[in-house]
Length: 359
Image (cartoon, rainbow, N blue to C red; front, side, top):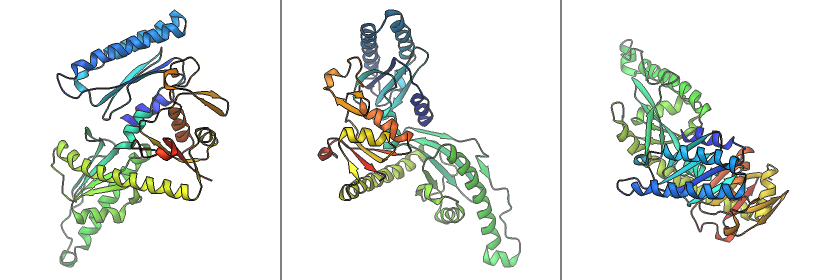
């Protein structure tokens, strides 16, 4: 899924690394226009590369960009398209959010919109839970839901849930214990997968089962929400519809908490909004949380520990980093920090970006 794609793209260090991003349409006939837009973007890449480097080197990358563009099925378009290519590889991603249309040629890919997609609504798990079975799904936004078939999922409770004798029939202890044992097995399997892909979990199940599961869960903190309904036999689109409502509310809550957290950091003078200071502190590993407006971009020239900011029209010039914000976000993640994207205008007093410091 998107997290794995982002990880692979972040590992690329090659020049030229081409990134094409533009808004698309979900439905016919509007999405037919998207192929024309992409063709024009590819032409822009071609002109830029031929102007910046030897023809033979440029043509290797241009060929890969064209091959990747031709493989795009515009019938599957969402709200935007991100295409990435070097001379050796190319890939594209349909994204469920609006982006700033742009073409970037750099030593790394422009991946901040993929990161935005993950953090805005993001990937998450949905665990449907009953006393007799458990199914696990991976979901993205309100557009994707796929059942997981690893680590024993889907799982069935093979225990006989009938009470063992009349005393247990009256108190239901035996049945409850066997349910907890089943849920404990489910939790262990879930945590194995969560360790590889640490995403929030939505539980779908009746109240009694939900509370039983929380009792035995080793890490109840990963549970982001609950659907109070048995979803054993539900269709995927029904599960996704309910889970998305929960995740959307959870995201709103997290954004509000992020704003409050930044306000406290400002009050304690444990932050900076000077771009050069942000650049230095992040590269020192002192950044805790980077707050940035989702459409804030800044081209710059890097001179050691100093950034020389340039105007937007100079972004395509040789030696200029098209978007230094993407570079800063990458360093944040490398040092274990967090990146939070806020609505445009949220950080006006901080010139579009602010960094909460660890110390």
